[in-house]
Length: 214
Image (tube, rainbow, N blue to C red):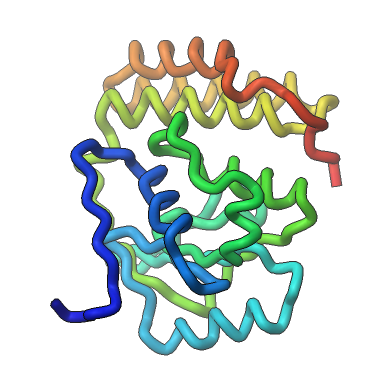
C-alpha cells in the first residue's frame, strides 16, 4: 500500500536468505539491494551507494556499515566480506555468479558470494561511512539449527575456496572455532554434526580452481 510499484513475493516455506534470489531474478534495475527486515540504511546513503558503484566499474557488491543498537559495529570474519543484513549488488554480476543458493539456507552465504564474485573478477567492499542500523535480536541466533548451519556452511565454504596450501590449516582452525562456539551455546552435538557434514559436503567440493593467495 505504501509503494504501489513494489512486488510482494509470498512463499509457503521459509527459504532463509536464499529467498532473496527470487527477488534478484525479478528485479528490473542494474543495482539491487538486499536488506533484512530488522536492518535500515540511513536514507541519505542510498544515492551515495549508487555513486560508489558508478565510480568503480569493478565493484560487484558493497555492504553498508552495519551498526547495532548499542553502538557496536558488525563485520565479516573474512576481509572484504559484507554483513548480509545490508548489501547492494550489480544485478548482472551476482546473477552470473550464481546468486543466493538454497542449499546454504542461512549462515555464511556472504562468504560464498564474495568468493564467487572475486573469482569472476568482481570486487567487494564494505563502506562504514554509509551506516545501517541493525535491530538484531540474539534469540534466533543461538539455537541448535543456527549452531549446526554455522559449522556446516563455514567449514564447507572454506574447504571449497581456500587456497590449496592454506586449506588444511584453515579447516583445522574452523573446526576448533565452531566446536567451541557450540559448547558456549550449549549446543555441542549440533556443532559436531555441522562439522561432520561440512567436511563431507559434496555440494561444495571443488569443481574449479581454488582462490589464489592474493
